[in-house]
Length: 303
Image 1: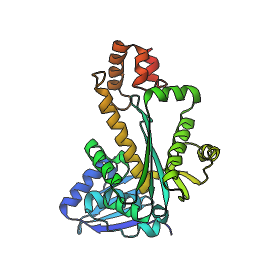
Image 2: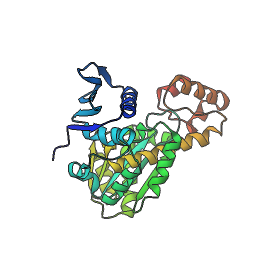
Image 3: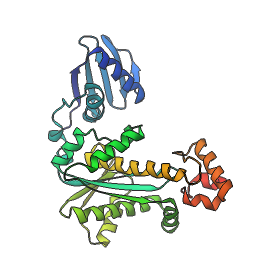
Image 4: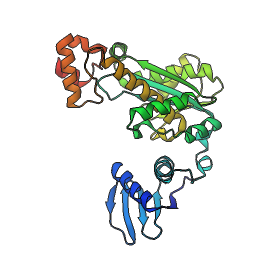
């Protein structure tokens, strides 16, 4: 079946106000529309709240994801769409979901996590509010959701943390981030196969040719369907993996920032460069290798 491209639901005045704030937060572009309190669009998705009711009308090819991951949990407070399993049946069949955290951060490890789901597990994760970690700004919320994932009946998961020192060694040997990612994804899938050997497929976000992962798995005697696609985080297994990976990443930054006595910021901002300069001044540029990814431009600038 084709995913839904339109959805409507009644709102109260408080929900309408909250929805407008959500759209502003998610960088929607607002425009005037007759008989509407407001109307906003982003890409091929349009959201309009009409005065009469009021009621919301969502239109566009991303309607299903917007309703499931934003409108229902944040505004309506309950799942009303009711046909996720009809339109997205692959999300409820046995599979592994793989995601990573820390790939674009100068400080900290590269963390790759994988989660096994089936229909019951996927429904439990949805009830617990599991969603892509990039949509969650609170560390406390990440940790609470990660705890809920680990407590889910029937769940199987694996988390691989490649600490900076080891990451730098591997990058020097491999010389390519996508190949390093492929190795990490394959390692996590291999570990999950030990726990769920009958799982038929694995899904991750698009980052490289899936044959690279298949090649590594085949060399280790593992054969399963490997799928990559954009916006894979809408899948419950990938979303859960993203949360477990994020938890491990932020916990590492918290714990290891205490060692040099310098908080380790995220990303590649000027604040990151300042913290790196302080560590380099105290421990030398070589001392950075235990805290950061040395192939980043920031490390070259400090040298």
